[in-house]
Amino acid sequence: MSHRWKLTSSETLDLTGELATKFSGMPASPTERDVKAKRLKYLQDVINGGLEIAFNWSTCLILSTGEVIRLNGQHSSRVLAEIAKANGAFPAGLKVHLDQYEAESMQDAVLIFRQIDNRQSARTPDDISGAYQGVHPTLRSTPKGAARKAIEGAAWFLSVIRGADIPSGDDRFDLFNDTRLHAFVQMVGRILTIKTNEFTKPVIGAMFGTWELSPSEAEQFWTTTSKEKEDVDHPTTVLDRWLVAARDGAIEKPSEIEIYAACAHAWVASRHNRTMTEIPRFSKKKGAPDLD
Image (cartoon, rainbow, N blue to C red; front, side, top):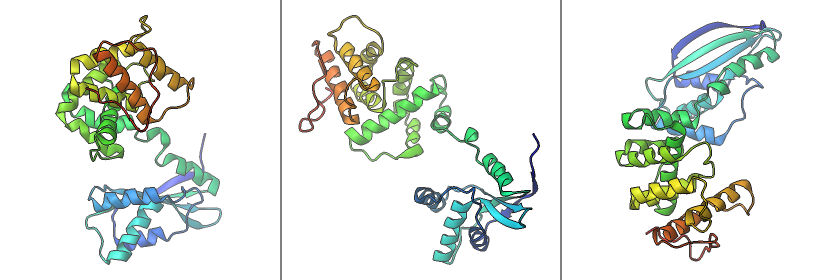
């Protein structure tokens, strides 16, 4: 199918405060995303941290009206224009890739907008996690999804249970660089399968806490929990039944800390060779039991 638009120029320019201010003030395309404070804050932090790469902006000449509109780059140009206005100075060495299009109508401009940062090309959490994981040869055979969940679970445990200051968002994947955690990541990779989607973040957080205490006991406990069992009174059976019920909505949706507490109760019972008939009701006053 032919389209009624074309790229008329593409160039890389030195990015100045003047250019950012001019671009930010351009007539905006109705195709642009709504301005989001979270997105602005993210870009501000990137720039202040010296982590920016070349920006990608684009304009479009609408032939039916003769208007030139900004098609992409509103968030970054706005942040940079505000920096130029507030500081009177501007970060040195910035670059911008500027693409200029022309289209017959605004409807055609929508098609251009769809090609920019296309959702099919967006970085997924597994892509970001996999980049950190792939640096370490010992982890390359671990499935990426399982490795990501292992790090997210460890980060949850360290932050929520230990109260450690753990970076949020994609920055938490820097934990891959702590080689002490590699054995845990590998263990999670051996246990998780497509049939273990009841193993959510707090469950894997509990896995991490138990692994710290005893890697061998932890792997045996969680491997058994992940599989079908006939011993109905064993803590691993009771825990898995409860986790599946929570996943499927058969019980009132538990909070993350309630899920962690359920795991902790089952782990402690198993370590002390006790049977269980059900997961104890969560008490905010008592909280989760110690794992040891």
